Structures are given as structure tokens and as C-alpha cells.
Image 1 (tube, one colour):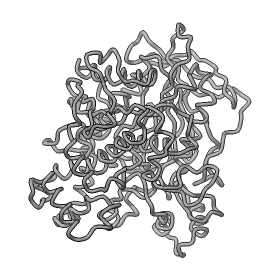
Image 2 (cartoon, rainbow, N blue to C red):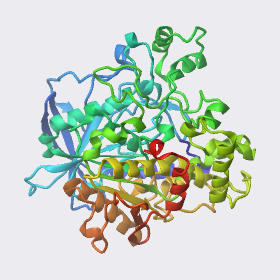
Image 3 (cartoon, helix red, strand yellow):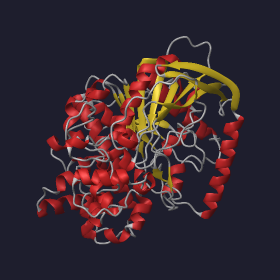
Image 4 (tube, rainbow, N blue to C red):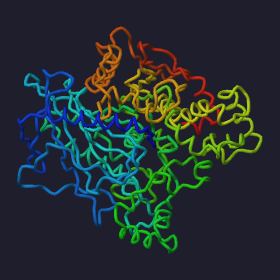
Length: 573
């Protein structure tokens, strides 16, 4: 993920950030509350809700849910924290995970990052345990943080829910995979961080008046991939009871890799001269400082990685090469769809109308690679194109040309936005569509709700502003819906127009009602009924969220069918 901003935008963002931090401080009171946990007591602070000054909530931030993953725990599965004796001050968030700043390019964060935050609305009249909503941030497994700078819970704190956010390790720290079982680094440490956080929440949330039997896990982009991965992992069974996947599924090609040699490539990138020996590579990486191990997502990628395997970053989830007690998955996500425990829980899944705008700056940077029309075959799914004959390949390319380029050989500059549409459908929407079809086949007794977010305003589509600078681009970009669930530090203002407020109110209402009652239908959208996807219908019905909210056939149904036609029925789901 890359954010681009002009000098003027940087100045605007700086003022927005300062104003945001000032208001955050202004809304923080001197009232504290002590909570017991299974590891010791913690102190949280009361804050006035910036959306409604008549409401307030308690924030418990920077709660350790694991030992610091340093020294011998670097790259490995997390371990539960040590108990503490004194009252732990949990009134501010802790350091973000190690990463390269997406806006400015400098290294930031700490290896000591495994902390979570709990937000509880103040309401003395509520006696029943509250539904719990646990959010996993996105960022391609390379960026992200559980801080109020990005995920301010004020919108949710207008409802009777508990919100939990947490950090997990990124990049090599969270997703190094070494095949040697003696090293006990089979990969997916970052997902194991998420699993341990969920175990902590299950064990302790009752102390905050949360219902440990009513936990909704939701996430966007890599957070959605993570949520789906956990729905496939037997170790997560019972730790959450509903799921919301926003712009991602475990079938996204950027969210999973079969390649296990990225650790060796990183070592070589940093100066290692030895062979591809796991133990030697491990020792070399262990001797490196964290700031040297923290690289940009594409630093290790070759043109072949980009064109042929569609890689956009190196360290991501894997099928673990050997079984351990902490194993997340040992097979590809596709192989686990039919037997996943997650087929028993209700799910909301959907995305945004212009997901492909995410690749705007990427496609600009690698424009030369795509100039040759023959390179259009890079869009074909990796798992099928390796087995195609030349004739089959040309037939599929003709279908893509017909669907996205009016049957013509595309030219990258003349057909730039069409390229982006195709990439958004391939990398985000069709993996979600396959997940929906898989649930229609294997989760017939659990509801699946699909949405298509296409709400566009001048202030609310923050992601599109940073990911795409083309004035001809339209639609809601990757991550734009998050602005209607969480406020962040570079929002110019609180959403202020009536349509923006209505959209925010509807999104929060639907998400919270799903957490409470397992249905997203709520009084905020009482004029329509959000129906679950029919298991027997070919077309997917979804809730279209735009200036108005309505049930309709998925607006990109035809394009989804085009991609589905590239697969056999067995390989699709």
C-alpha cells in the first residue's frame, strides 16, 4: 500500500492531526476506573464522546496480551503475558508494530507491540452483558496499528457495544516462514498474535461487562483476510461467534503465498553471503536490528514476482510446512473452505465499488511492465494459468478484453482506469465472490449477507484521496467505508453533511445490530430489508449502500461471472 500526497495535503494533514490530538486531549477527563483481569489490575480513563458531548466511555489502552515478542520469541508464536502486581496504567495506546511509514517512508514502531485496547460506553442503566466487537486492522500485513489515530471508536461508542482493537506483528516479524522444524518458525506468527488476543478477550471481557459468548470479529483488507483465516483454523473455534469481512477474504492472492524463501531473500538483501540454509538464515536475521529488518513491501520483489505471481509484498500468511500446537492452517485456504468451522456462524461480506483505485500508484510506477498487451495475461489467476494451453490462454484473454476493454488490445495509458477496474475485481472482489459462493455451498445453515459500498462525498472518501489522484476516477475506493465506522486523525472534520451523517448512522447501526442479534437489519434502515444470500440463486443479491440504500443484484455480477468462468466448479470453491 502506498499513499501519495502533495505538499499542500501534507500541510493540511499536519493541521488536522494537531487539531485531532488537541480535541482528543480535551475530551479526556480526570476520572479513572480500575478493572480486574486474570493477569492483574488495570486503570482506564473516561473520555467524552466527540460525536455527542452528552455521552462518554471508558478507554483501557495498552493492555498486554502477550509477552514482548523479542529475543528468543522474535518471529515465533506469542506467549501469554506475565502477571503483574501493581495497578497497570492503561490510559494510552502503546507503540505500533515495526513498519515503514506509508506516507513518509521512514521506519517506525517497536517489536514490543502486543497490546490491546478496550472501549466501553458509560451507561449505568445497562445490566446485561454487552456484545463485543473486535476489529483487526488492514494494511497488507505490512502496515497498521491499533491506535486512535486511525481507529477512533467514538462512532461505535454511541451504541451499547464494547469495541476491542489490538496490534499484531507485521512483515518479517509476523510472517517469516522457515521450513526447518527444529527452528519452530513455521510462519503466521502475526495471525497467532490475533489468536492469542482473542483468547485474552474470551477470558477477560466479562470484567468489562462484555459477553464472552457474543463476540463479533471484523476487519478490513488484511484484517478481513485474517478474520477469514481464523474462520478456517480449528484453534479459533468458539473464540468468536460472527464475522464481518470488509474488502477481503482468505482467497485474495495477495494475502497468501506458497513461497517460503523470503527469509533467505531478505538476508541476502541485507548482506548475507551464505546459502539458502534455514538455520544460517535464522541466525543472520536474529543478529539484525529491527530497523534493518523493516523494509518496504516490494523491496524483495522482482518483475517476475509482480507479473507472473502477482505478488505485491513478500511476508504474508502461508500454509505452515509442519504441524505445531499453534498451527493456524497447514493447507491452502481453498482446501479448507468445505470443512471450516466458520461455516456455522453468520457473516457479512462485501467491498467497495472502486477497489481497484488501490493500485493507482502501483500501476503508475510499473507502467512499463504493462505496456505490452501480451502482458494482460498477468491478470489471469495464478492457480489456473500455469495449467493452460496457449489456445486456452488466448480464449480467456479475449474474454477479459471483451469485458473491460471493448474487445480491443488494451493500451495502458488509454485504458488506465479500466485496468484498475480489472485489478480491483481480480484481487479483491472475485476472492470475496468465491467466498460467498463457498458459503452458499458449505454454510447453508448460517446466514451470509453481502454489501456493495458506493457512497461518495468530497470529505468522506479519504482513502481515494490518498490512493488515487485522477479526477476522472469515480466510486468508493479501498478502505473508504472505514471512515464511516472509525474516525481518524487526518479526517478534515467530523462527517457533517446530512447524507454523510445518515451513512455513518446506517453503517454503525447495521454493524452493531449484527453484533447484537446476528442480523444487520436495524431501525436505521427499516425502510428496506437486507436479505441474506440465497444458496440456490446464481446471482448474488446484496445491499447497495450509496446515497440511498437498497437491495439489488450485485452491480458487478456480470464481471464476477466472467472471472468465475475461468475456473472449473471444483477449483472455484
